[in-house]
Every structure is written in C-alpha cells, then in structure tokens.
Image (cartoon, rainbow, N blue to C red; front, side, top):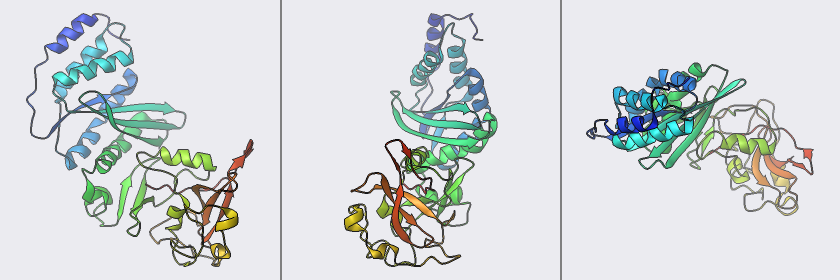
Length: 335
C-alpha cells in the first residue's frame, strides 16, 4: 500500500531540492529497479552483486545509496502514482543527480521460472541496450543473486568494455583457465566458445532441449543481444573431420544455395556415422545429433536445412506446413 501523505506537487518540489552531485572520475550511473514494490525490494536486496561485477571491470561511479534511496522513497510515496509514473519520476530525478547512464533491473515471475531484464538508458531516457536472462525456479531472490553478475558481464562484453575477458584471455569470465570460453548465465548458466576460424561465438552446450524450428528461432533470440539460430553455412562451419561437408567442402548447400534439387549432392552425405565419434569441434558438447539451421529450402519452405553431426550429414528437417506440426530437434545458438 502506498503512503498517501504526499501529494505529487510536494514530491516534485522535494526532488528539485536534492543536492547536485559533482561528477566523479568515470561515468556517473544510477541503478533503478522495476516491477511491483515487492519485486523492487527483492532486486534491491541482491543488487550488490550487480554493482560489484560492474565496478570490477568498468570505471563507473554509482549514485550513492543515500541519494538514490531519497529518490526511490519520494517517488514511491506519491499518492495514486502508478508504477509507470513512479518510474518516470525516478528518471526525471536522475538528471538532477547528473547520471549519464541508468541501469534498470526488472523481474517477471512465471510458473517455474524467473525472467530478469537489464535495460540501459542514456541521460535522455532512451534505451541503448537490453538483454534478458532466465532462471529455472520460483524464487526471485535466488535468481537475482545468480544472474545479476551475468547480466553485468553480458552488457560489458556486448558494449566492448570487457573485450579481453570476453575473448577468454582474462579471468573475469573464463575463471582464470585461459580457455577460449565466456560464461554468461541463463537457465542456470551456459558457456560459449568463439571459433577462431569463423569469429562466431557458439553455445558450448545447447539450452532448451529439443524444439520445433520456429521455437528454436525464438529461443535463440531470447538469449540476448545478437543471439540467433545459425544459417546453414554457419552451422556447417562447426563440422570437423568430414571434408565434403566442412565449410568450403564439395557439398553444395550453403546460405546462398538452398535449393534441395540443385544444391544437395551425394557429397552432402558422404561420410560415415561412426559410433562414439561426433563430427564437430572438440570444444563443443551436447547430444551428437542433427541440429536446426535457420535456412529454409528454396524449393520447399516446409523444410529447413540441418546438420547431423553423428555422420557429418547435411540434409533437411520438416518445419511444419498448413497447420501440421514440424519435427523437434536441438538447436545450438550463435552470435
């Protein structure tokens, strides 16, 4: 229940009396929490892990808790103020506090999972970055504790403020092992591997289980900025040990040649399925099976190209047509 002892005019006046903060060395930033009052409090209680991850790798200066709490309390106390109006009130106050960036953390709870969103706003309130991560379970505090450092690292990597650690040369993400992986948590965490031959960043272990082609595209997009279902040329770049279907091999199917009748040849299924052998890079994990690509057949859009890594084969999977449900298969997302 919101305190009704304040009027809107009093709140605005009080915010105008907040002392100006001298801009410290580094970028001055304000941390904002979205959602219901209960959700805001739960997120705020775990926010130190987000701040710590940011401050470890970037030259940020967070607005002091005292000033931030004044803003939050005054906006929250306004009689009849909706959540949207409360947020707008807080954003106006950030200008007085000379914040150059606003990091907004929001939660959405659904049965069996918690979705956390990081949105970065400029000093005019415009969105310049957003990423979403999910955690299995119903406990918001646990999800925030687990994912806040990963949300911070995702932003730092995507904004190129943390390039050394994101590429695996630092210990911020790779755990000091020097491995060419970065750990970005979503659905309890996943590792990524950057293929030096293509420059593409891949999931080491697929997430989400098997799914239809349409669901696979949605799943990859939901992992955050830049993630997508790979096209067939990108997926073929993962093949190792089958020269006919490796990138540049004699199999004619590529992202620019997608016709089943004209591009697929015997070379696309030339290698043998060998028990215990998977035709992909040794850094990858997951089921040695066929995986979806985003590339549809040019001559039959009821099918999409796929790669079966148990045999190095390039062929198709049924995506569905005229109400018929397509096949379920695993996906390995890329960016």
